Length: 638
Picture 1 (cartoon, rainbow, N blue to C red):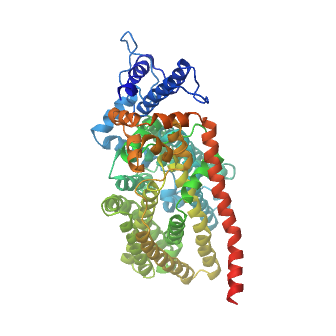
Picture 2 (picture 1 turned 30 degrees about the vertical axis):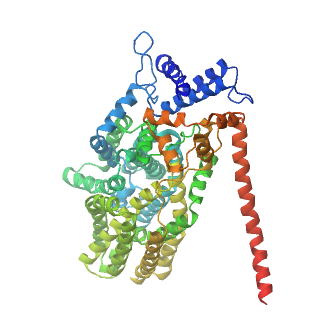
Picture 3 (picture 1 turned 180 degrees about the horizontal axis):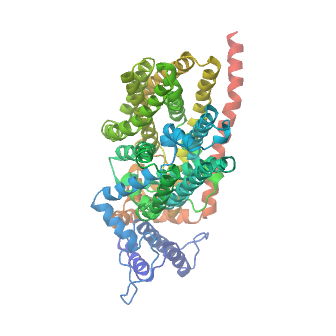
């Protein structure tokens, strides 16, 4: 035991005093022993060195080796502020150990609410922009507002709502590559740029140049809401800072969407009180969002902090974040993560796609449906205002409560709530009563909040943190690709059925009934097929962790360390306790390590690649043989 542990002390000293990286240190060990890491012959001395360097590398991942960050003469050394062992990150680590950072969360919550874009209050923003003359060139000369103008604005918002969910895929890739801090800062900046473009279009409309500046409005809406989604997604950088309260945190994050729906009401009240044009308030809003950029930069966790906290909470080692934005590779890896539990994701995706159709249709058709249900255009405007108010009040009041339910009782309870809310909305939407419509709008608003909470929390259980952004983006993109044609079918049915009440009630009844049935079935399926306790690592991620031991996968690491429990191995690999890491190093079988050290890194990766290719060939042969087997079975039965 002493012989194994002896070489470790000078290795740590070298790192602490000279700042040598673990990779460089490992190279020095092999150089001293006359052997390279990929060499075919390795002496016992070099193997000791490899073991020592491996311990240092694991300690480096635990942020232990850089705690005393001083040179040999005792003076503080120069450091990279974003390095894992830097004083900045050590201060952050101490703050994480003191408890959940609720003050930091509150500051980011306010910034995210201000930078939520146009879409949350689209029902009222459409009227505000129409009154301001945006796309007024669509109307006959002399008219301030017309039906064609209103339809163009609502169409832009409707397309923007769909495209916004499609943004999830690239946003997830950006998040995985650059982390929450960069994504959130850039998102707030893009939101400010988009608001500036929208403001310019309103200024142009006010001065009779709408035909020239109207295109700025379209560009501004998309840029603004892409930035708002970037900024909102960066909030996930704090998700592991609140262990045991992830669902509550996700609910509070989603509540920023509901809170921002109050902004058009505030703008309308200010315009009525002070008779100031809309573009003045939009300019002030743009400046406020621009000021929030710095707050997002300071308060949002860095990628290193996110990984450190995730490792502590999950109790498992994590692969390093991607070094480059390789879109095809990152999307492929995210797709592999989803394919590991294909039946579960297909079931959830179909159920959520059918369930989300009714809330989306009701929100976009609130004004014309209210007019058809109650008889006047004023009633339609009133129903649209009720829908916006319900989005704000219900989302803020009930959303965090639902998050606490999810943390205490699990995701199954959230699915049951989705079934109940869809059924309640389906029953009340036909009633020409204001209390009934308030209840219907509140139910659908609550459904939308629970929908986002469920998806975010659900994918946390299946995706490793280094691939969470891409996995969520791909998953949401698939759900939207399924639900969008279904929802557009309802819009087409409304156009074909005419202007009567049935043109709205028939599609909504179909959406409601299919949503209740699909979600009720999924509640049963989820109970029969619960999610895993920890996210499953891809084979490539296991190779990245195992290659430090000269192994190709964690099973070989278990063989080298004489450990029979994979769970125990993962626990030790994830530990930040130096004693645990040393015990893992001392358990290494030297003869087995000698045998494995003769293989190069390329050989290890090639073996893993060949193993995956064999699996793919086997699946391909099975797919080809299945029709033949069925034909043979039918022939025998005849």
